[in-house]
Length: 387
Image (cartoon, rainbow, N blue to C red; front, side, top):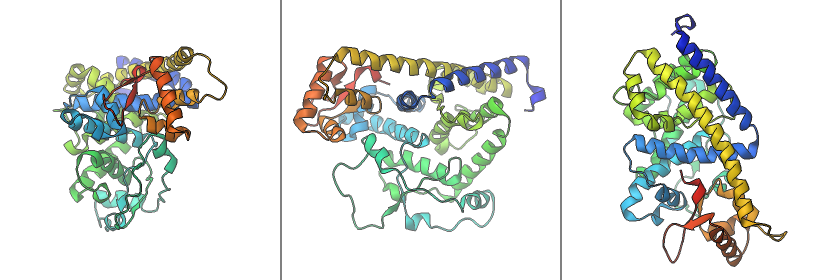
């Protein structure tokens, strides 16, 4: 679609989406607010994407699964594991965590000699992957608290591939598969056929993203987010494509502080999205443009609501002694709304008894509730942050 073919209705929608995006970008310029919103958005995106795939999401069980899937009741463990995988994929796209690293013997496979995949591999062959930030996993409780897991295998290689490259898509796919495949995540690699699919998709996205600003963003989303049965991408890539959609607007509109959970819009307006996707191409793009505007407005409201939540928590716990660590606990709840006493102890470097007293204060203030009904390994969740 060329700019001269745009209808007045589409142009109006594009301008409104640009306006809403600008207001959101202004609000999330502040780092603390942005960190809170992105963590919250990743959880909501994971739940919405799972529901789009027909998963019966229980928000409490999902939050418990972010601590440890073994603590989820057996009946709901599979669903919670699926949502957790999507959540970790969302965190990967946000740059908060890295995907499970591939073993050297797998990643050293020769690049294809010809074709679209060869072009994609050559384009990224000179990129140097930076080491993963070890602190990011610890901040979210995704580190291995059971100690050294070295089993004598060749150590996996920590990678941080450049976004929107073939290696990045493979890393995102590996991140999604790690929780649910039952296989060693270090040995998960895309088959040659899936590499071809991914390379073709990236080429299409590059073409769509060449359009200026919001027009390019909507063109990119049009390829990534088409609902079934109008999918234009392979079924295996659908979960990854939805998470890529959350970054598409930021990429094309040069708004690095924006991460839009577009699956929430798709899930909320599922019927309308399906009708639009089966209509004329402009009808689908017009629906997406309106969805971008509404998502940006919703995220702005959510960012401000999280500010109010933080202020409300501070009022509920009241004035504490000067050396109290409770404010620190309140701050990390936005990133970890589900936690154990042991996790609080580790985060604060305190005694177990001291961490337990802090959790008791949160329970007394009604900020958290116990979610597992267990004598040991009890998990507490922040009631105001349920996705």
